[in-house]
Amino acid sequence: MTDFWLSCGHHLLDRDDGGGLLVTDGFLKAYLARPELAPPPNACAAERGLHAALLEEPRRPVTSADIAAIADPDARENWSLMREFRDRLVRHKTVEAAYLDLARRGMGATPPLFINQLVHVILRNLLDGCEDVFMLRAAELFFRPQRLSVLEGSLIAADEEKVSGESPQPVSPLVAMLGLPATGDIDVLNDANAETYWERSDLFDMALDLTAGRRGLEALGKVIARWIAHLLSSDVAIEPLIEAADVNLTWYVGLDAEATRIGDALWRGEELDPAARQRIVGLYRLTLRDAEIVLDNAKGEPIYLILAMTPDKKLRMKPQNLVVGLPLAHLEVVS
Image (cartoon, rainbow, N blue to C red):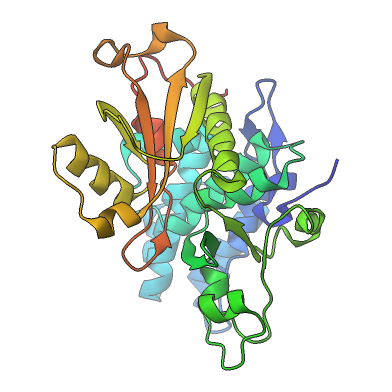
């Protein structure tokens, strides 16, 4: 079996009998290596002492007095956020349970970076053994913002972090369009280069074709089905739709903030302008295989999932919407 996404730290975690990820001291120590928490040379004694104590005992209680003693106000804020996040992780049996708690109670002040890291490692767990690299690349949408553009009639998604540079002398049409540095390189994932994904998986430098009716959106639908099965113990079928004919949005979930706005407008009976319609990237029909777990007011109704990009062609998925937005009468987590 080929490994992938080593950067998420999954090798630092254990699994319980139900397949959930168990937090280890090694995983907690990895957060202490982040530049936001590693004391700089001019850090005060209190900050250095707290960091050293947690390296020795990463589950050690951190008091408000410990944080107040730190001289640098930015460091105090970072440690406050880390303490709350660390305490949530160790309070729950699994990483999945901690994420569900965040999704249901609201993300609050939790840094998006921390949330995306949890999503990253949970996906690495539930996709363990997956040999379909199109699914793996589609899963990156869950935790890494994308920039979309049209290339030769195809809708292409590339990693936002990889396309944020300036390129005076682009090396390919896709690099030119998306603004990669001249020293960078990016390929659209296809059958010919699919095997290279394994060695490049932590570079996030392969783009994905999200054109309706093609493999990218189908692969994303498969990942969504696995996400729901793993976190909510619910078996679903997800069908990507090529067009939105005869769609009754009695129940829908926006997979991002823009999609939620579009779904809300359609639910209110408003007519979408052409620009808003162009921002819809994907539309899925979801069916819960066990009708008994569907809420009464949604029984017999189709459930739609909407994926959309912003006016500036950014796509930022909110996978927590799948946790809180489905009409399920029971919600369970891998324990």
